[in-house]
Length: 154
Image (tube, rainbow, N blue to C red; front, side, top):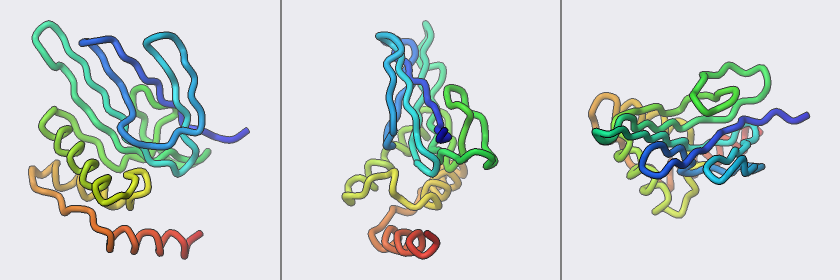
């Protein structure tokens, strides 16, 4: 049996939303009209957004960019992700989540799928935003270097 990372998504209008911003699942299951599950193969990179509100407004805004791990690899547990994954970026609070979403948009504007971007870029975005600094933009040159490095180690 192949090892996959399972992510449970949920949509309760105006209360709780858990969704994938990017990533390529290998399988999907509809659990009911509000819930579904996605499975990601080892090494797949995806962004998982969690948002919740209460009577007073937004209670939780979080984004995790994770790499799905293979069996036996170290991992970090994340609510809604089984068994967990390698954390490339983990931020909370709407202002930081929004800046991550803009960083994802910037990668897409280059014509690059964010799931294919260098994992170090997401670590860089995490570090810079954690320090309330501006991350460097992803560039075609950085992506080409990552692609060549990945080909050499494959």
